[in-house]
Length: 77
Image 1 (cartoon, rainbow, N blue to C red):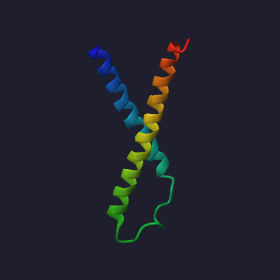
Image 2 (image 1 turned 90 degrees about the vertical axis):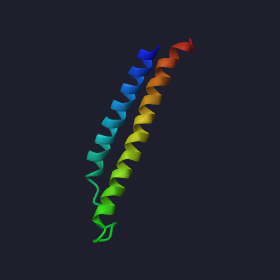
Image 3 (image 1 turned 60 degrees about the vertical axis):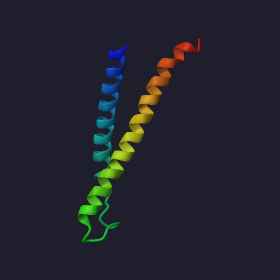
Image 4 (image 1 turned 45 degrees about the vertical axis):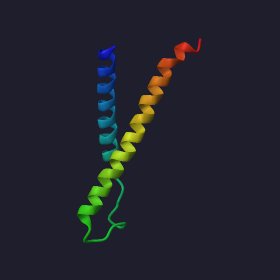
């Protein structure tokens, strides 16, 4: 039982990290320079990091929930 919880935690952590990295690469293609002031580069980078974490985590949660739902389908029949 505890080993299953550990495996779920490991899969969740890896999923979050992978989707955050994918989101980071995808968000690099967007030109944010026009949206921010010239003297606020540090603040802009922090905001982009937070946006990346938020999007990556949301996509990862969707993926993990979808995986969980697909495993629970066996109880339907």
